[in-house]
Image 1 (cartoon, rainbow, N blue to C red):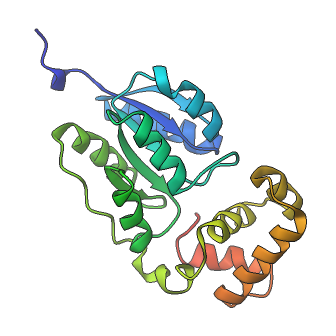
Image 2: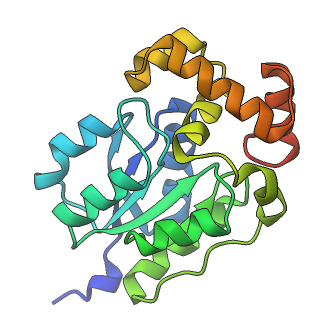
Image 3: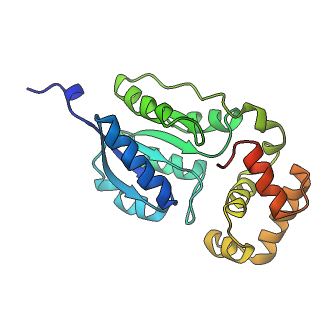
Length: 208
């Protein structure tokens, strides 16, 4: 009988950016021992496939158009406790990373670092121990942590080029509610415009 460690680690990936999905596909192919079985661009597609999804590790971005955040992680863990979930996100480590681990993630890997970190985290899932959150973005935590989970979600979409109208549609919120969130984000981060938000995100390592 072949030992399971001789078999590639089966992985599913959830990320709404095609460039991330295709980039990681190439990374996993180069790794040689990781088999990317499925990819999803939004949460609802993942949840529909979840009951029959065949993989060992789920790499999950928590900022998704249809549904996202810690709640999504908890749903995944409740329905598929057999899956090792790695959160792969632009959000900084610190308290947010601790929250994902408490919600059942096996590891927290911040985007923007080396892809070797993600590969190592996937391989570590077979050996069992939980991987400590990366400290790469601890410097960004002070102002950013004052944002609520919903404000962080709106912020992430804004700095990736979404308009307020598109965000309202994606998150199923009214335009006035989105505008209120934007005002709160500006006040908490000390910025005056979307352009300044983008510069803040780049400077603090939240986006590339």
